Image 1 (cartoon, rainbow, N blue to C red):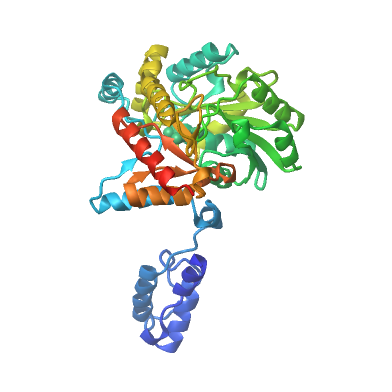
Image 2: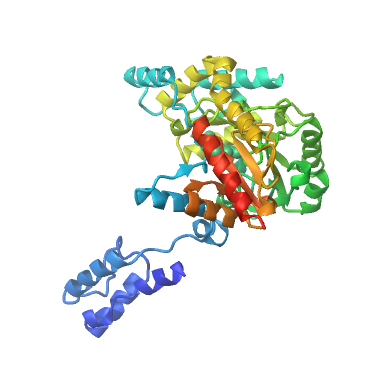
Length: 454
Ligand SMILES: Cc1ncc(COP(=O)(O)O)c(C=O)c1O
């Protein structure tokens, strides 16, 4: 549709010009260079004024074609953020909304980290920074990965990126050729399909089941393999389900990747938010040192979402190629942000536990509040700052329930359908609101579900 409009607008209205000039303008404009090109040689002095008038008209109205790639990033034009956008619209009208939609920590970045950022900038670290990341930061990240995995990791394994999202995109760019397929468990983090498409790949969600705690099964992964499959993308602790994959699941995923010669891309941005069980990085699994690409970030672990700082860990050969990629895309990350990240990492595990603590406390309090009724049930969430609630007993889809809740009670939650088909009939709560307000909202939500249930 957009493409049609763009094409139609390239033709200047004939009534504004003499016939011949109009035809020439049409031809000229149809080259899609009307704004940039010199007049073609056949344009005479007498036709030029009319032509330039027309060019102005054309350039004011015309837009060159938008790439198919960006027009099709989100399936069917929907991106699953309908409730979120509706909540923003209500707020713009002055209506207060209790927002439990997005994973934005309610803690602000620690003043010491900001002081380190300021000192670095004042100290002159405001020019282009080393493309792969500063040596100090790459060393600090590799030390953190070594401590957590026990696997030899050096700065050559590390690429610093503007956030985990950029690390994910960069990993996919390194793994895929156009048309290659990427498998990932459904439910999935909402950007995965679009990120795969942006990298030229084809997203293939692999269903998981609520009764299995949304853990992926090897049989389902193997059933989805085709000759075009190049990568398996996993995320533990998981957004949106809160699942944390244990050794069995991780081993099974690693075997699938090994057997089918795939990259195992492991999104580990919630590695500090563990409520039960232990965290297992894909990098620790047998054979995965050379096959895994792990995505990390300080967004959630250090409440630094706005600083846009993350990293990718992979084999040095691939990292070297990805440095070439970022030379032609982001050109690195601001040096003062990297210095702030370096300072953040020196604060160590106790600081990370302090940032995670409110989410653990709220998760426990929400589970307690949900006890004693069965209209809304929780998947107990072993990690990550979300709670996935099953509202199927209301008879509504997650989307209808969420829209109803927003319209009647001004509480915004994410419909499970935003995260794939497997989470239909669920909603996701972000535990990013102060405890009392969160629990009040949850109680209202439960009452609303009881009233709605047949
Ligand atoms: C699973 C998952 N991966 C990646 C990201 C991206 O994080 P960042 O802010 O580091 O880009 C998020 C953010 O919410 C996420 O939930």
